[in-house]
Image 1 (cartoon, rainbow, N blue to C red):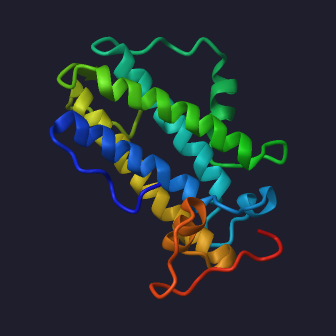
Image 2 (tube, rainbow, N blue to C red):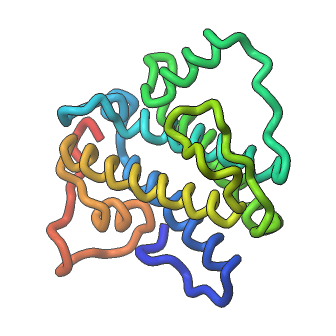
Length: 200
């Protein structure tokens, strides 16, 4: 993960580079964590690093399915409502049978699919606004693909901030220290170096 997004030359490259940049933050924030640490919820919320990785994977999958189907609505989920509701409720939790490596691999796969869509989708195509979801606006019929991509970037940014706070609460590691460890560059003289604990 770079410390800054790459330079951009046009709208599509800007959308792609900023999406890629904010996707990459989760690999840095998870760097060096054990599965047990990734499940920890050390703040007053129930959020964990592993749970957030799982959530942003599902979030991208849902929104990018809308992009792929535009201007039509995505296909309806054929599963029973109870099964869909259970999966949605489980979306923020890293279960005991899940590993951080597995969650990151699924996230990486979804990231690649999202980036491919950003490179090829019609940015002006209309994405229907679901009218059966209570928190979506009732007076708007559709968003553009462009809006959806910006919304996904916004969601990734919000949740990577949550993950930063959780990670620092676990072992004190901050983003530049984690970037240095992940990318192999030196932070000596810039910030106090983070030393992985025996559990990291």
